Image (cartoon, rainbow, N blue to C red; front, top):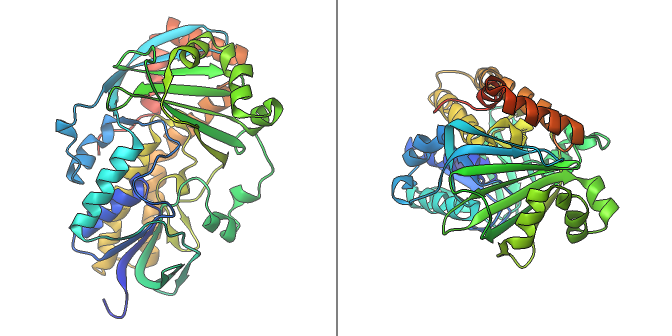
Length: 378
């Protein structure tokens, strides 16, 4: 390794980080991965994964075929007013909790020889010429290449003073996410339901073990105005009769909901400070982009292919970063633009009513939106 501790250092152990670590290790490179939490753990996440990433996850060693996971082939959308429409999802997806799939991927990565430091929050990442220095509680590590996969907002983003961390609160950068696991939800096994409420929306779909993921996104303003999560749900979510019924008649499995704050959907860069980024670290991936988890893994696959060319000295580091940026925009720019547009309509009374009515009366419009927010198998 020419004095390097590792060929690759990955900061962040979400789906993008774990699958990228597995693929690079399968190619024979030494890989270290840092994760601030301890595996396995729950994450605030919608837990519906589109079929575009099915084959890739199998290639990473996840035995999806024999897990008997819910197959989700329909989308149901309700407006704040209660207007409802249902449409088919041409590609569809499957339901699985992040606790389970992250745990499986972590175990597979360790089995292959990836060095994983979980419960380890990286303090700094720095590129110096043709090497990277990662500073962490377990010491400094030198790597030929570092990859940022640290989620929507991290201490690294703040340290770098990335643009989205300096923005004043707007409709795209001051969201909170709240997640529950429940049983007894009145949602068909093959359907993902998306219910709008004032300044937000809630997704509900089945996962493993006869459980459902119920995860919603709303503004920090709603929480502040209501004074707490329970009060916010009664004040805002219950305005949608479908959500009111779900909250009143489902069996909640968490003692307390999982939550995350300061979520931003402002524009981010695929490369920053000479470091390639994958997943939410670079993507402003709104839930309405079709499937952020598949996009995150796909960005990692693109980078794996380019990283191998760099590590084999077929292209320079700077050329690799330039090509990665171009490829990232080529694959994801339209999805992200469409997702941001849909995000701007979500949670507004007359806009969601109009959109639901249009999608119901003009199926081609619904198909167009779904097509523009979903990718192909990779």
